[in-house]
Amino acid sequence: MSGFPIPVSVLTGFLGAGKTTLLNRLLKDPALADTAVIINEYGEVAIDHLLVEQASDGIIQLSDGCLCCTVRGELVDTLADLVDRLQTGRIARLARVIVETTGLADPAPVLQSIMAHPALVQAFRLDGVITLVDAVNGNATLDAHVEAVKQVAVADRIVLSKADLVDDPGDLEMLRTRLRQINPSAQLLDVGETRTGVAALFDCGLYNPATKSADVRRWLGEEAAHDHDHHHGVHDHADHDHGHSHDHGHRHDQRVRSYSLVHEGAVPFSAIEMFLDLLRSTHGEHLLRMKGVIELKEDPSRPLVVHGVQKILHPPARLPSWPDSQRGTRLVLITLDMPEDYVRRLFAAFTNRPSVDTPDRAALENNPLAIAGL
Image 1: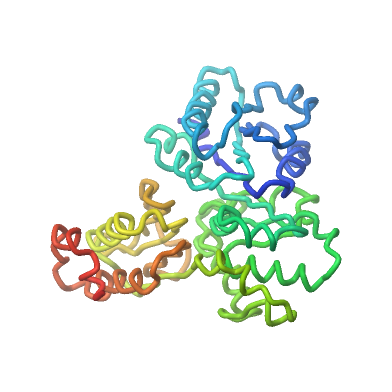
Image 2: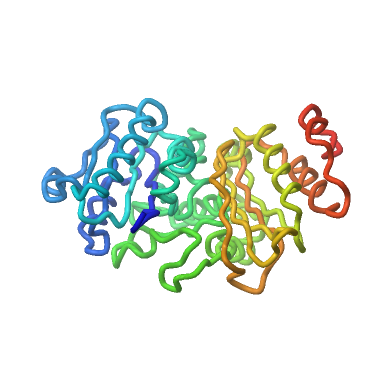
């Protein structure tokens, strides 16, 4: 299909974070011409009426209801309808789709709808998740709502709004550090940084349109994670830096873990397939997001790319070649209430013994903890 796959960006953030305000401004940028916007009304201000008239078919507004549940099927139907309109000429060109979720939504079902539907995965690709955080109320919201923590955890870009309204610079820096701790691989931006253009928010996917090639390091968020570790330390906490006591408020934060699984050298496809199958079957509901690039023993010259949300795994893709000199296997996991030790032992069981026969699948499915030594 010519022009496919079309990039889809998910815009999320808790109630009052300013998603609609940001979206109204973004849609006036010429760089977002030929963009369809799917919005969900749930007590928030709608997209400007004048803008809706100007965009006509470019904006699709879903019916009332939570995008993560009652409207999920309608989202799939709407995306399919966009493809039909494009193929039949009712839409001349479609360069991008933006899905704005309700502030109460867990974005995972939205991501699953895009990644798992057999027809949609041919027409669309997930570009990235953009999460807005209200700088004034951000700490309190993260304390009170695990959904807000999930929205931050799965983000590729985190955008701070209303930072100019925060009285205490220490509180703002504490929030920034907290967001980096929840998701060290996401790029953290101030909403003011998006005023000069939309480039900072989009093109989060594996392929960099500027270089027209795969950018694994950027996609995995390794640069952002490295900057976080370098400046803050892996276990640094803003509470101690600024004299604030927020241990009680970090109860949700402590449930989220972001870490990498790295293996030097090629891995048999059967081993990595079984590792992913067992991980999703035993703890899939706790796997918020996973990205990875894998060097396969069967064909080490063409890396395998995997991308998953909870139990849903996007159909694995093969790159024509390695985009840089770094090979091996790199998986980035963001988890909620998942035992990290179990995951690491399970990964080691398959990757550290590539020359040994793969363990019996039926036996492992009956006792998945045995192979991890637990």
